[in-house]
Amino acid sequence: MTNEKNTLRIALGTDHAGYTHKEAINLFLLEKGYQTKDFGTFSEESVDYPAYVRPAAEAVAEGLCDLGIVLGGSGNGEAMAANKVKGVRCALCWSVETAKLAKQHNDANVLSLGQRQISQELALKIVDAWLNESFEGGRHLRRIRMLDSSD
Image 1 (spheres, rainbow, N blue to C red):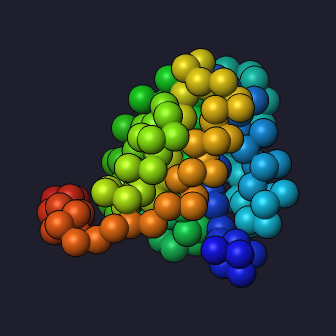
Image 2: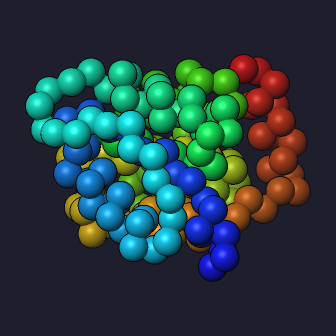
């Protein structure tokens, strides 16, 4: 993925409860050579997550960004909000293994993380693992098509 990183665009969206991890992830991605589009929020002041997560998910669905990462306190609401957008397959991950499987088996194009659930160090490992995996296709493709047709 070395040459692809320069063109891979990643949307970021969070509420106040995921702000700190989002900032660290953004820096991590930029240092790795990815392009990012930050949809906010831009502080720890309390905000409503759909206002920031939905635009990030829409950017992925519309092809403005290739992948997305959304964050919040638990990541649950953010995953729900992202998955309301047709064409988005957002996976809430809490370990490197769940992130790998989200990409390998579910072709997750958006990753959701909970800042209050995992350390920043683990969040960066999860992001890195997810970005470096690929969809296996095969038997999983049929299931992805079923998901996409139900939108």
